[in-house]
Image 1: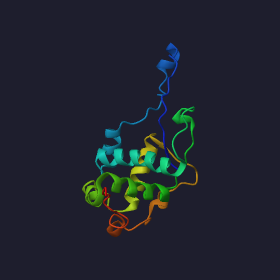
Image 2 (image 1 turned 180 degrees about the horizontal axis):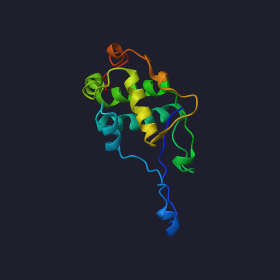
Image 3 (image 1 turned 180 degrees about the vertical axis):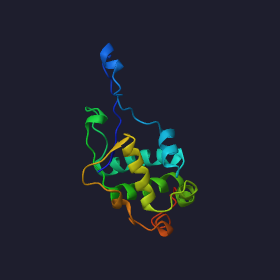
Image 4 (image 1 turned 90 degrees about the horizontal axis):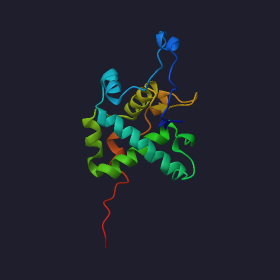
Length: 157
């Protein structure tokens, strides 16, 4: 299950001895560092997946409770659920151009979503459970037809 990690961590000031230590506190990578490391997709593709995860989680679990900080609410989404949510989110945003936009970002199959997700996990921007695997993203749907089916232009009568 995947969820965006939106935690702000405040570290107490280090003692002089600790500052001399060679052990550095790991930091979350910037989006540009992740893009540069993977070198397959542009930053917009990563932002789309992060936003799409929030969209998919809201579809599956409903709105975030107002009385709890988002970081404390576990909202699990499987790889397959995320792929379907990303498909709907793309259609919502770009309609019949969804596949064209994703292709422009080098996203041509659901495994591409998985590669982006796992790059975000490796960078500390998303989390996974022990049961999650990149293979959960393989062949979830066919990109050639998935963005044409179920899309209807809404009109007011």
